[in-house]
Image 1: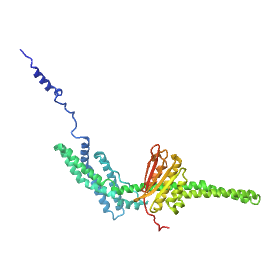
Image 2: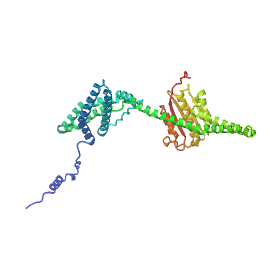
Image 3: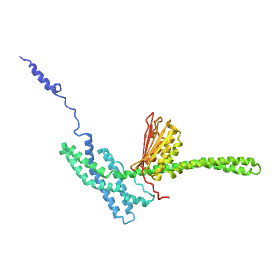
Image 4: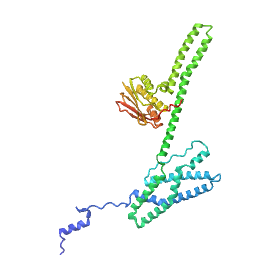
Length: 406
């Protein structure tokens, strides 16, 4: 007679058959790789160190030794220069590999730009390029390090894989240090050179635009008026004997044209560099500008001395253009201009109680002012919430005026 098992036995059997149904147990985690994606990228980078190290080492040793050995001949120095350019190219490849596999974000160094055109200036600049020589050093020392990383990584994949993530993380840290130390731009100096090159381009473009504006104003304004004046005087000369009254009337009209032409020339000269700024400084010049604004403007200038002529001129034209914007666009009832010196900076602040909403990024004249100040290491900040008020702050580097110059 077969007796059925007791209920307790059946419950235990069910629990053993279905572990997930136990109240004190948990489901097994889903299967996954032991190493994450970052670790596998680091392992791949360590394995690639050897072939890339062989390529870089062979290239550097072969090309640089041949170029240096033939430097006494005509082709030696050019060959050495081209070898250094190749080092720059290999450095670009290594930076790309570091970005892809190590997550290292390293900026590319600035390209070589000789100050003058010609073969010999290019040759000299290439031979003394510190970036290329640092790249050559990087390629030369990578081979022994590549042998170490390749051997350790490949061996650990088979016999020491539990500790491989820790080994790969440590060796990858060395790789990151080498990339940052030898393949990135040489600290702040090189970045500063790139900024100055960009600023020089802005200054050149601004000067060219100013020259075109002056030429256009002369051609369309005073020059055209003077040409018409010469023609009127010629006609008056012809009528002097035949009709003296008509000739006198034409001379009177020409006299009025002369006054208008002189006023246009004065306005044009004021746009280049006003005489009052040269003679009396920023306080008087800015007060003169404020009188031409359509809203009342209070001007406060607190300077212990006059700055350099270039800085003084930029400050004048900055305030002048800002007050023109106040007249045209702000809808303000009152404005103020404050100029003072703070340590080694010339500070300018223009405030109005208008409608606000001014934006440097809107493509207005404010963007041009920001570029012009940036070209001389200045700073331009606009705070203009909708509804106002608008506060524009400009900073310029302070440089003392050289009174020995005529």
